[in-house]
Image (cartoon, rainbow, N blue to C red; front, side, top):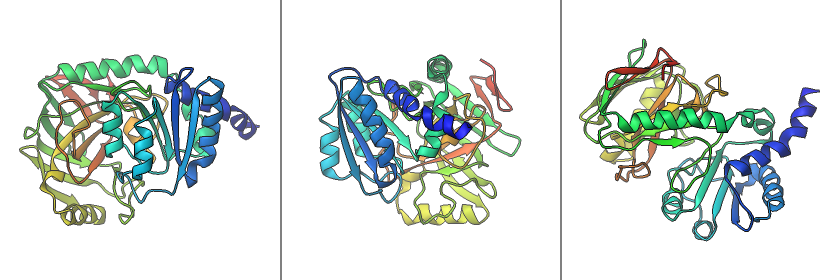
Length: 332
């Protein structure tokens, strides 16, 4: 009975996605899929068409990994529409299309790793309108703070300057200039380069990695410890996964990839558990700290070989000395 209910609800959840993209009558909407997500794309096409907008349904082979640019003809098409909705098996957030489209005022909604099963699971039953208020509040707090400090019982202890940097609310709604990736919801800020000091103990997931690292899209078997000095990741320690990460970053031969690039705070109250996917960034009580490029965030200008997120659970986050999260529970 539950399975039948979820299957019947799929069109309604597809409608919610189009609603989050804020599609209106007469708009041109690129629905970009790969072979694994083509069926989701068809559901979205139907909903876009019913809204009186023009769906442009495009299917490409799966890209090799997160961060790989889409083919040039697709990128050109993406710059000629009003909205891009991209249910894909990989994340194209850190590609030129994302930055160029948002800078041009094109709204962009990414659905990373979505499937019929995940659409049927109820993740899009979140009351995004209510949750958006809290997400906006956290982004505002980040933007007003001068200093952020994150600690955990597992050893994370890192401080960074946010002074002069704008907070950004990625609340699931596609708005001009801000990426949307529902059901992921996060508030984020780009730390001032060169200011982060301390240690990151990533105990959940490392995101954005290439397929050759077999812990990609999996919960870590043991924590990865990253020592940070003058805003750069200086030492990576731990077990097998830490060794593979260290060797992969060294292979890029790009010093900029070690830059502390992002502080993100999970803000979706309906995502209850960590599961080894990009949705780990949305879990309330967790944060993620990223290295690599930051040019896609307010105040950032660094282009790098990649962007890699490290998710940390049960955090205490202080902004200018005041705890907004304490041992994984929000206090604001």
